[in-house]
Image 1 (cartoon, helix red, strand yellow):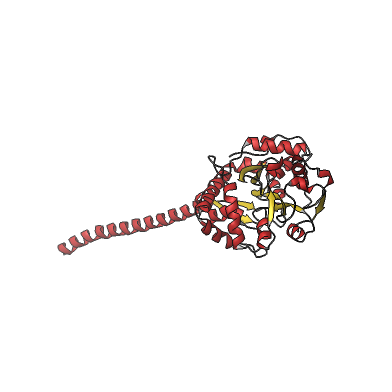
Image 2 (cartoon, helix red, strand yellow):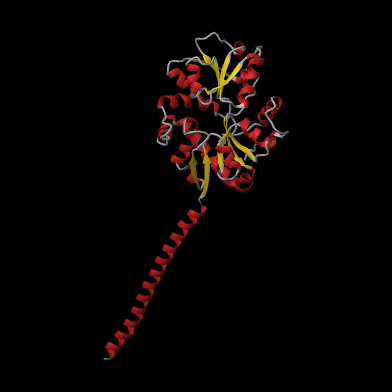
Length: 344
């Protein structure tokens, strides 16, 4: 009996030790599960959603966006980016001004004109650094320069900016813009010039309308507006509202970091980038792969900021464009160029 009692005395502490170890192990596992859940929740909380609206349907100029999304560059910056298409090409600027979306694509002159109307928007990055909108004429015609359009018919999209560009180019080249007839053809720029309805068009892009016309058997000669008195402006810029810049500057910086990586990927892997773009084409606006390939070849050098970071904006550019718009009565009120943009 003494021996049995001795064994029982030893057995009780051993059982207690085992119970403690088991409970400790369970507690540790429970804590690890909670820590894992907390980490997951924290990760979700750290992901910040941004909405961006395109200027048009997805095309080659937006390749860097889809590259950033596809390769996880937004996610790496802690961002959840929603890319939206506008119902109307004029919607993007209005919606970002109203803080209904965070970011939008627009155009440098439009940003300045908007600010002159007390619309609180500003550019945070220059995407395409030079005009894509060129004055276009049939290659087989007898128009060799803008001055030859004196007394001719020019189709355009009823945009005052385009009227000013036409006048500037013809006058700078030694012609008389007052004798030229401007015809509003809406968005039918391609059929207007292809059928000979007009002698020239303004509003067509060298990376889109010109490529389509040439593919359809209508070779085009285009005149760069910067060669004929129009300042070298940023064709595409990334826009936020004043309030957005104030409240979300850190997130916008992360966004810019991600799209810079996206643009680098596009430069180094144009075919893969286009494949990603084509996977996101809008059903109502299908893409022509050949056109988009040619478009990207045109775009890449025009998006290159050289020694500066992708998206950098030169103050001198904004002032020159502001002055030209003012000279052409396109600004409703006097504004400062530095208020229309910011380099984050």
